[in-house]
Length: 609
Image 1: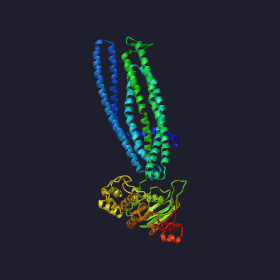
Image 2: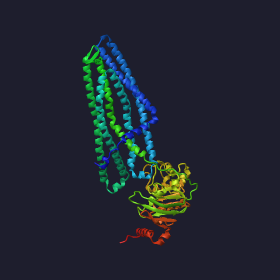
Image 3: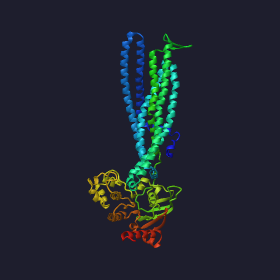
Image 4: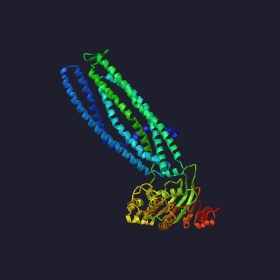
């Protein structure tokens, strides 16, 4: 069994989750009040039937002339009570349904809203499949559990209180027997429920792992097939699924024990009531029951029938609660996972500094950053970038190029040092305003399942169609857009609608339409053919004119005209200058460039022996 399965829910976590769910109910007190009133009416009407039965039985055993009248009134009263009970239950269910659906809607909205606010490191550190499971599946589980349990809890509590009162009025000695034996049922249910919650909490985590793995395999299906890892993928899936089977079996086993265990205890209680009530009926003399020096009101056969019916109704709620204990425990375990997302701290978005006109001067001063304390990455970095400069960032894989971009965009916070834009500390600029200073084109193209025009206008939603088409033409994607079935109104779906290169061109058009004061291009033409790349480079030259631009490039031939080249290695900028200056130094950049140039010559020439 995996370590994940052995983890237990924190002590008190269940109570804390239940309290938080109750706090979410406060805006809907009207539904709670309606459900409460309807549950009282429902219980009252259901308790009338046994009384009518009791009267009828006593009349049958007494004077014959009242038999017909008793049956008539009993039948009419019983029919009316059933009708009113059904109506009360219908209104009760409507109130509970509205309450649960609105509560779940609010929780899902809060969870999704928090996902849009959490820092990028949280999203990077959690598998997407697990996060999706929390927002979709876990919240659905909460909804199912609440719908199953809330109505029964309302009616169950009312039934217990009402039947107790009536039983004590009829015969408090037998009622005391019922009350004394009831804790046995509660103890059995509590003992099993405690273990059920733990099992369902672990089950929810394992389900998240299973979803995450399935999503990864679907997203990388071609890679899996290419390297022949189908069997390994299946083995990993089966291993996680085996964990899910074991913990799921345990959870279902404990939850399945609850109902029959409580029913056995309740059957014992009913047997005690029946035997004791029968004895009281036999011992009654002249309508009076004598127990030593104690004299009680007489106990008739009709009263015994009423008492047995009420004793059964008294114990029935415990059975009903045990029936839904699985859903309730599963709901609380799933709700705890959802609240973990809601409890994540949001990004600090405040700031009082506002840049009226951005020149684009960037200064990185004594910056330090690492993803983990054990592995330092960027230490004491200092870079000065003049306004309107074209800055290229080069270096071997893993040297920190993309990390530097993430720091510039404030996707990650610096461990030390500061970044200044036009002399203003980036931390003092409101985050939303700060990120609008940059336009980004990344290696991974992000497009939504919306129309082509909507995707291009993603950064400038109010742009007219003429500007959208102009941006598409500047990015050399107008020609293939017009060849689509509905042109700019064609809806994109997944990754199959357009090629990777076309997706990247659409992302470039999006940035051109947004027209930001600064640009970040992270291998922006990696999926584009050579001829189109040459055209895009011309378009980039136009859009970069007068703007500070940061370009992450592996092909050094594309950044020969850069105003400043930052050469990174092991998280540090080891060289900086223009192409000519760096070549004169004959350092790391010179070796890197010569290696690429030599490789390019070999690729263009004939194969060498």
